[in-house]
Image (cartoon, rainbow, N blue to C red; front, side, top):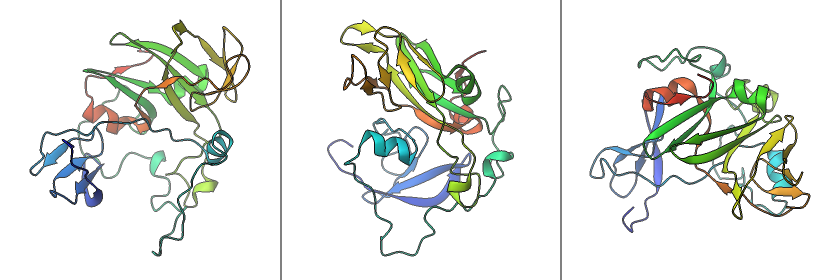
Length: 240
């Protein structure tokens, strides 16, 4: 932030049931959704959002066989792999008392994308049906990938026992000056121009374009609708 590296901790506070972080340099408070400082010396400053994909371990391991993995041997006693809020995503949010946008179910999962001052929510329900969705938001072409095989982190007490909710990725469909179109069946994503296969991280894994990488677009990849809508009240909803 302005040349200063900040590091963060969890404040223990929530706003609209969304995490509030603090930085150890100025003790300003930061909203997880949107990355903006809301209390303290840096109020109004906003962190740059980078691309984050929430995918299954299998997807990551296949894509990055030499990838690094955080160790559970941290020196702290923590129940890694467990969920203290069993069944959280199957009921109304019990720590949320903000305005409720009923265009979707409050706990419906969405992919949230913001381009400048325009936002879009793509429901997982639509992705589960269509598998790949193309859209133009504020002049930016997007393609949203969906694959099955990733469990919910807030369903069962032991996360590996949770139900499959799938995972997503959002990319610019233009590659080397060519606009690609895509289709999927829930387990495989293919472009219509060369029949190359693509993973959830936007890399071609086989076919004519093997090794090519789509440009990733920062987004909220598995956001609960109530949280997205309260911070982006003017968001479009795909399918409306």
